[in-house]
Length: 509
Image (cartoon, rainbow, N blue to C red; front, side, top):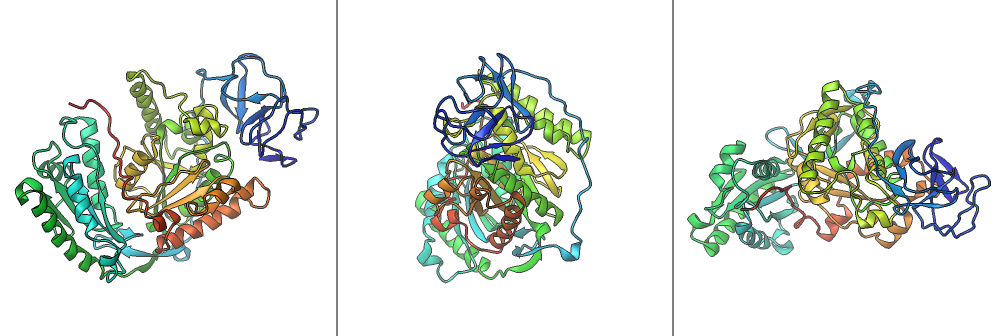
């Protein structure tokens, strides 16, 4: 990465564009010999540093992010008005860049104060969960949880809270289809997440996703840590709420007995997410997270890279690091599924940055993907998982999720993620109970505006006062402190009750 007089940054020597670090007025030299801006360039946006003919590839990160839709002069603003998407061949080179990870010896690995469950899993939080099986039981689940406010929970300091997780599905999605299976898998995955001490499932009684069906299809077993309530069998709304409150009170009293213990960082499973991105996300926050992931993997932990539509155009970087050809091909299979899936609805996978992404300087999905993939660091890709599947492999893995942040994170938590790291360049305000969410700002202006929402400022990299590796180490230590119980900004503000969004698609009948 080469900085140019602090006005622009060039990500790779082969790039024919640079990124403005701050607003650049027209007719301003910005550090590239004999080149001046031909118009005003907003911060985060791209400037051509070489002449480009119609159809020439636009290079950033040393990779193709699009093609010139018209001739572009050095100094011109490069964005949606003069960049187009086209198909081009990618070289997947399965496993070519895979290398041995230098693991930290077991006895020297970092530790955190976790909550060891009876089945050996380790949580970073100690919640009671009330999960609705269907939208019809959502209000009842919420009313049960509302009975356990801060005043009631005061005598139970070892319980992080009682949270109701509700959704808008569960009945008319039909049976034995992929969407129905995903809902059941997600609910069961949450019920098994080690950040929940105990869980109460609340159903209506006549829904497609009724309790007996859910339990039979997912292998969930009733017991002291997993209870169920059926509104129609329990006597209706008021009776169910009363019974639910009684059950949860017992759960809270039991769960308050747990104590945190010093455990190895190999018990950490961190979900990686970026939302509300800008052009700096791939330069600062995402690479910092990638550096922390490399450290986490060396200490035996697991990191889950996700958002399949947002690694499109960067998948060739991941296949080169695949542990085996099979892993690389599994990743490509998910890419091809998404191409087919979006086509069914008249859409396309190849150009989906949001309006906020584009306002922040991201022009194409290829550009966003190349920056987003940096969250995964540089270690080998060990495995590829379907949405909400239980993650069992250590190291860097990939989970097939949509790019929509709440749905993507729901899949990772269902897969076992006990902590989330979330990068943003625009300022997404969000959190995901039961897993604490560390928020990382890509630039200092955002951090200063939204200090109460951001846990870390990565803008010092742009300003030349911080390095990616130094900040990666700092983030790893913040992960350990957060896993030990230190509250994140989103937790302090109470986020996480409304962000449970299982991935749903297909017909509603």
